[in-house]
Length: 277
Image (cartoon, one colour):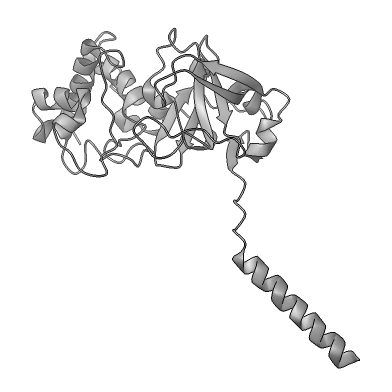
């Protein structure tokens, strides 16, 4: 009897293991990591979809999709309030594709309101414009972005982590225009434009966190191998200057960066290149 029972049990286990081997693997829950006030919290997509502050958000002009979108989202301010207070003046938004945006607290607390949109696994978002993947599973979107001039790089799709940090000027003094430079100098304005639009992807002499584009100071400054005309064309439409299969840099039209701001960025890069090492 014992041998017969054991034989049946083994056959049952064999069938069970075979069925498990043939079954599709269950997808791991998407997790957003938030760090502030010395604490780290991991929020799953299911948790945020049912968060008390979650709401349906209508976005008339979506940064990643280029059209109106509707999301289930949580206000970034409410999400940060779930962690201990932190005196850091910047929130670093890190995407899984290597983009790292630096968001000043003053921007987050201003009239343009940031939200963390959460992709529902049961109702996935469509692919982004010109891409094969969606903006999920987490996507930093903005309500009323116009007053604060929110840049395209501050719409952080494929968001993976949010961290309270010191400002770029404090973390990387080497990229900061000297205090002796006049307040209205183009290079000083260019620093602000660069941090908002370019630093998320490009480093400057090793300073920064972006992993998408090349360093623009090391090993040779970009202003040494690009003419001013070439730099301007690269910013406006990079594909018109050089192209390769994995090119990720978007075009920055006049609606994203004004001509005077392009001039300021070039002045800023020239300033950094000329600064004594």
